[in-house]
Image (cartoon, rainbow, N blue to C red; front, side, top):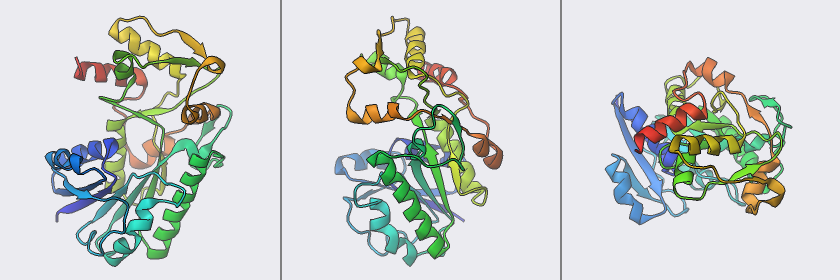
Length: 289
């Protein structure tokens, strides 16, 4: 049997998952984009491009989908994917074996640098975090009502080729912002793909997973390490009080926590290719020399 993954919001992470699933064969792919200009690039990935500008999906849009991945962020009106696709998904419910929703660890808010797991309190109080919590709840209610297997993935900072500290150092946009005790979790995009593929293969393994590597780290250390790999001087260390950060970046620094990946590794049975940023950045450098 050939499976088909329908991706609502075909982007960086979804592209990595497509590469991973294609290794085993037996898959077809469709992915949405708001940009007609991107359709050719999506098709070059072996993915059927679907132009979607936020309107309601046609009733037959998901007729042959066996799996659905949602990676669109919510807005003030909720999750645009659920609003637009809910009826179309339920119209063809029988073949659908798995729905994956990509959320963020921002739902946890600030835990004072403590470890958090999937059972930790959701303290996110920024407008963005509140919208994510509401979107997670809406997808859960939808899945429970229609008996879908929904798995929510709470993602940290995502990096990989083209989106890493190596790239920001090379293009001159890297900054070393310092806030005492601040830690961020992160994960290489290929490890996300491994985790998503494992969940697809084991849909009953769990309904919420934190995805993160083994080593939360201060952001300035990551930039300094990338500079060392490239043989350049790191940018000056700037206290956060003196940094001219946009509001979104400021909101990231307002939350401090360590993300536990214990459930991800135990329940999905995966081993990280890039257990920390040092291993991951060395790989990025080797791929982009």
